[in-house]
Amino acid sequence: MGSRTALVEDLMERFPHVPREAVFKEDLLRGGVAFDPSALSDNESGEVKPKSYFIFSFDHGTLPELGEAALRRPPEEIILTGGPYDLRRTVVSVRVNPSSPYRVAADEHGMLGLYLDGRRISDVGVPPMPEYYRHKLSNGKSVMEVAPTIQWGYLIYLTVFRVCQYFGAKEECQYCDINHNWRQHKAAGRPYTGVKDVEEVLEALEIIDKYDTAKASTAYTLTGGAITRTVSGRDEADFYGHYAKAIEERFPGRWIGKVVAQALPKDDVQRFKDYGVQIYHPNYEVWDEYLFKMYCPGKERYVGRDEWHRRILDSAEIFGARNVIPNFVAGVEMAEPFGFKTVDEAIASTTEGLRFFMSKGITPRFTTWCPEPTTPLGKANPQGAPLEYHIRLLQAYRQTMEDFGLSSPPGYGPPGPGNAVFSVSSFMDSLPATEPVQAV
Image (cartoon, rainbow, N blue to C red):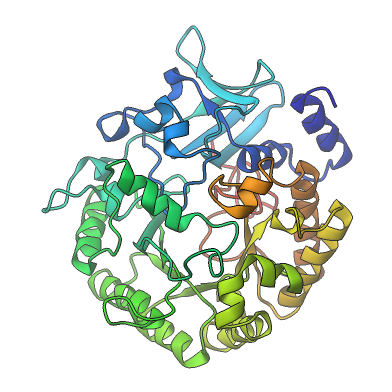
């Protein structure tokens, strides 16, 4: 097709049951968006909430390649509304790509818009600087560094271990840039704490709780790199779990507590539960057996795919199936040189995984793959997966949920186009709304 507009419109016509908002959102997530200088933030000194780089870079270039966007950060997320497609409120995580056909810029009246192939296709809203970001910890660190919020303020993202002990080409997941992201922020002289002190986390949460008077922040996620040995003398369950224990003791019931960790043995998972965690995310990354081995060599070596899946099922006995929500990275199924060659094959494989878990009451969720250029799969696949794959996945995901009588998982905010706040994929935008659509 001659333009990205033609591709998008063709897919909207072919898949009318997928919300049109999700088509644009998936395209922005998989391919990124460029920012005119008029659309960049003034970092923590401005009126717009800047991108926090909360765990991965989620960019299509390294910081030195992003130009002014590396000096004046883009917003954490954008909201799309209106335009010729009459888009409902759609929250999209920002992934910067200076060469993207999508561009955010201000018009002659200073109003931000999203432009595709040179045509304005929607209005753009940016997140206001939250009051809690304007206050420092007693040691001078910013709340954004210690406890950034995403999903339009819904989720506090606590990356308490900024690197991964699966290290090097023989262990790192082939699509993951957590270790590079750590290195590039340190090289740029940005604050990027490797292991966050529990007291710092609690102090940042005190500030959020004090100034988040609308109680927009509803959940927190504890996460970071995999721990194969120890960090600060603690194994993985105890390391991440002791933050949850401290948070729940200080702020009982204030937030939904979630932890993203490896698929751990049952006794370790029980420790998470005992520490006060409510939702467990033992991410399975990619379903296909061969691709798991090729793309997740460290996880294959230390645990193995079959054991990983057994542990996910075992964890449902502790948390309840509904509160076990493993993530997969949507799109790597089609990454060269090992991935599926056709969309049909990739969707069939991914759906097999969805049916495996959903038949047991476990509802996976997914993050749309961003081909970060410092990763092996990003280097080999700079365009990511075809947009058609992502649209058909949304269709297959919803159908599989309906087949097994499941509803949207807890801890992700409201579902439905115009309602959803989950920003790194469109799975929540594509599910039925359970409450009235929010006003813009």
